[in-house]
Length: 386
Image (cartoon, rainbow, N blue to C red):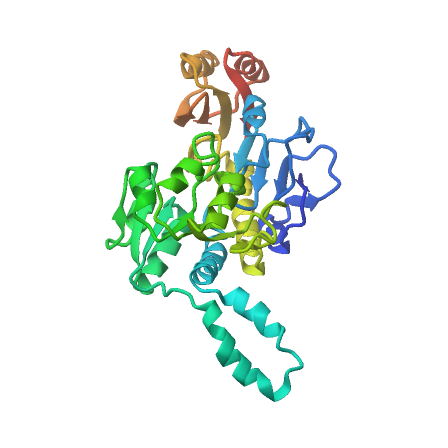
């Protein structure tokens, strides 16, 4: 039985999805795999026994990807599993950014105890909360992944004009983008064309503080900005200055910082994007299926450090090789297998950056001495026999 260490509370559907051959526990000393949500693993000592890490969510900035890759640990995530939950909150934020709904609600609370005067006071005071409709306005969606596409497509239903920016859009995502959505390849042109901007970019060195003093200066006066992706996409000091000056009419974020809280026209939510039982269930089921397929078959689906690599079982035995993406590793592996007199019935190899992954199906089980030679092959990080 394989043990899966849980570093956060996970939906019970994960346990059901893994099945009887797996045990989910928060006390495993030598786990075969690790499942988490928001736990910060950067200062965590990952046990040598761990073959993979599964993030029940899309973002993996809380996982030391490079460290895992160096040790041959596959890191999975669940892109799209919580997309609907985040999409609904973004649409809520979009409505809040256009109209002073929260301000009006808070003001209305001050009328408590006014008795029969409440109606008249409401009519007299409501003008201070006038806002703008979404219809006919231009929404810029920065990042056309699972969430960005859903937001863009539904915003069309509000009668908005949509501009999408994503230089790395996948073929699958491109097929899901409504044909009425305009694509912009220049980020500066994108920023300058929008009344509303919603951020759905991953956090990388290139996107960190992409909303900054210079980019805000290129935007339209009175632009509203929404950030339900990662807080670090925004230079908070520059953003606060822009809100206070009126250059940015409203900033809505799911990633509050101390300096933003209580700033007028900044709406801070307590990271509610995926906080629905439906989203947590979807993420748990998805990560469990991916990890179980990896343990049982060596297949890779939705890994952030290894590209997709899956094939149907063929032959008597299967080995998988996590290795450095350097010359002659595959040739050396297959040569040793051939020298052992074992026939290869099928194989698949995929590479991503500095690392690669190989699946080999064999007509016979490799002898122990051959496996020892494979493990000592230059560039090999981890070999599994399934």
